[in-house]
Image (cartoon, rainbow, N blue to C red; front, side, top):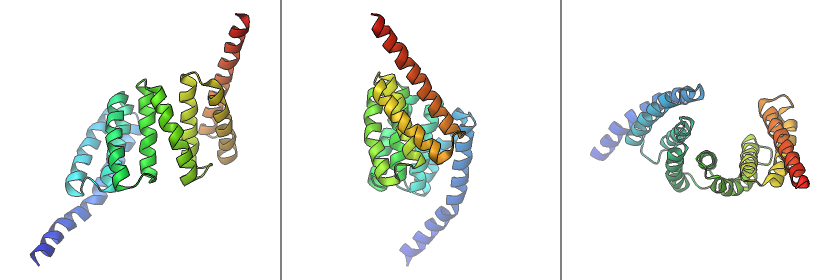
Amino acid sequence: VSANRAFAQTAVPAQAAVPILRQRQADAFEQGQAGNWQEAVVALREIAQEQARILGPEHQDTLRTRQFLGHAIGGAGKPLEAAELLRRLLVDQSRYLGHDHPETLQTRQFLAVNLGEAGYRHEAVAILRELLPDRRRILGNDDPHTLRTGHMLARNLAVIGATAEALAIMKEIAEARKLLLGAEHPHTVRIYSDLAALAHQQIEREHVQEAQ
């Protein structure tokens, strides 16, 4: 009886806290999306600590807030710190949610993006090369998340000089986005802009090589 009473006393406040913490989490995320990344970082750190204390470190809400926190730290201009946090989170998500869980996949992408921004482009490419087939297998070839991963892979390949492979992937993603989202969707416009810029760089590089 005493054990059941103790459980009830702790479970009810936790249950009541979930929607409040989720709303604070959403508000902090919106702060970051609006460009107030530093304020979002401060808020998300507090929320993650409270969620870990009230809900437990393995709770999906706690893990999600840690993911948002890593994203916000990167947005605040600290990609290496963000990558370190996301790498630790990835271990916990794989344990508690599973390797193929959508949020585990999202953390892998956030990790790759921040590693790339921190200058570790080859490691970012390695992560994205593994993530892209996983997303295709789990979400499908035309899922927006799959297409975003392909776009990120192509951009990082372009930075390390693998232009031909980057162009091939960008063309595939651009055609898929045009069919799925329409020619005027911002994501479609962006990848066609990236594709045109990369194709122009490739032509200029070939002209230089021919002139030598």
